[in-house]
Image (tube, rainbow, N blue to C red; front, side, top):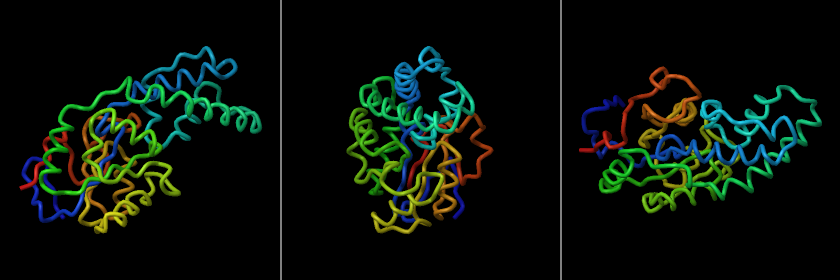
Amino acid sequence: MTLTTHTPWRRQDWDAIIVDLDGTMVDTLGDFVQALQRMLGDLPEPYASYVLDKDLVERCVGKGSEHLIKSVLAHIQPAPAAMENVALYESAWASYQRHYPAVNGRFSAVYPGVVAGLDAWYRAGLPLVCVTNKPTTFARALLADKGLASYFGLVVGGDAVARKKPDPMPLLHACEQLGVQPARTLMVGDSSNDAQAARAAGCPVLLVSYGYNHGEPIRAVDADAYVDSLAELQFA
């Protein structure tokens, strides 16, 4: 199916829309930085006194909490001894899980155009599902905090299935739950993770120009269309 960004898409061509959360609907970078900084404060030196760089966190976001925590730890002190690494990671993971609920949504904001886009899609009668690598409990709480929960009949978090994006499993699971075909289900995201998962699942993919793409230009990612705002995606 050929997609164009700036003209209305035909509603009859689509059965559902899958929407990513972090970097696509909500700018959550501040939440991640706060939770990680508090986590580091619970660890021994040199981690406890390390001041996180926001750009580092942005490059590491998008592949799940495990990848995020391990990437930050490795950046601060590369290649520690194997046993120490396991113990350190387990301590960091437990700390992160304690701190994240306290900051979830407090240091984040809904991107401009998101509500207008979701409203238009919802009025068009398109079922919407949020598929994110964020744990389901955190995702649901964030959507509720930002007033977006009512748009989504289904939320598939990073702990809902065995593998996370860029694996296609979460998208295929969402399509199965909705009873729709991947080829008629649009994936809307902000990164190569979303695009790779969509391609592998057989879903067309649209990417936003903002968000977190591991420090790489988003238009270099293979996608069917790009938008600067979700409000640009209209259905005739």
